[in-house]
Length: 362
Image 1 (tube, rainbow, N blue to C red):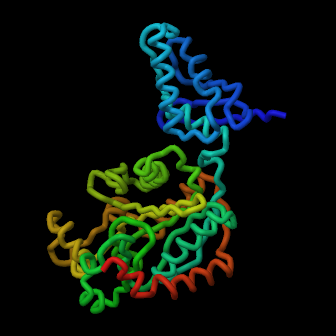
Image 2 (cartoon, helix red, strand yellow):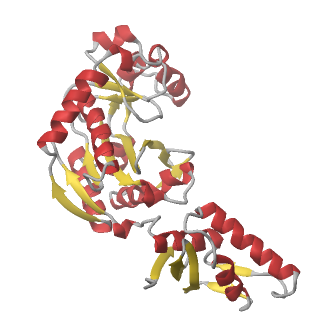
Image 3 (cartoon, rainbow, N blue to C red):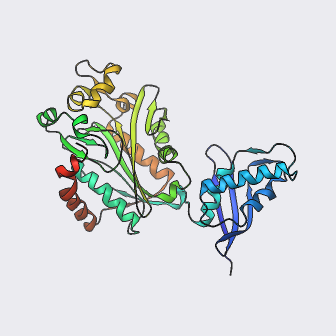
């Protein structure tokens, strides 16, 4: 018996696109497009349905979109469609996303149930190890999506997976201030982390959540809720560049990602709450160059975009962020298993605390 399938995709700021279809011998059949979008002329609708019919169930989002675009162009050339085609509130990429969701290749936020984890203060190296463990667990099907904040007591510099250790960190200054140097598994730049001076969270999701999105677009997609959370504590923010979040007062946060074989994605963000810029400039070599143009050489200068713009304690900001995340998504409270904690501790010992990993890019 052929099982009918249904998929929907809501275009950000646009309209809802729905697809009903069935699958026969690995190909799409009985395809019907619908939604509250605007399409003109009417003759374009059956052309789109016909274009989708017969496609392989493995066809990617980009290939589906390109195929529908070609078929619409051919329909105009042969006179099936007269005049220009208007697609308002949606496009062929949205159609492709709805198809992938109908087939189960793509998922939305509503399909995810996040487990909120609060393991308490841990060394930054342990947090980095947990990111890898939780990513592997989701990829292996033993865990669902997770969300957690980092809490730590000892100061650290957490550098990106591909950064040069000697170019980023002044070893003498790091030792003088007792700053641990940790290399994480995701790319991006260095994070100067003293207790209470920034807000960091990690989210592990299935890659199906970002199916069809470019690498760049996945950053903004996964952090859309953050812009809402910032607005609710009084900060108007936007995505800037590949992985930064900024307001009119400047950069607030940076994001980084790591994708795991098996279909898991780690996405984490660090926001500057109240950083001692003088100390950071001593410890981070690259930071001196980046901040020298921004008036941060004066004594006791703070980098505090979240504190100064919200006028709230760090704990209150984090509490509001978590409340926003719970309101926008399905969240249950949970805890790390003993096996996960032990795996992270072992990974810290054998990988993240070793010179081979920390200095893998000297």
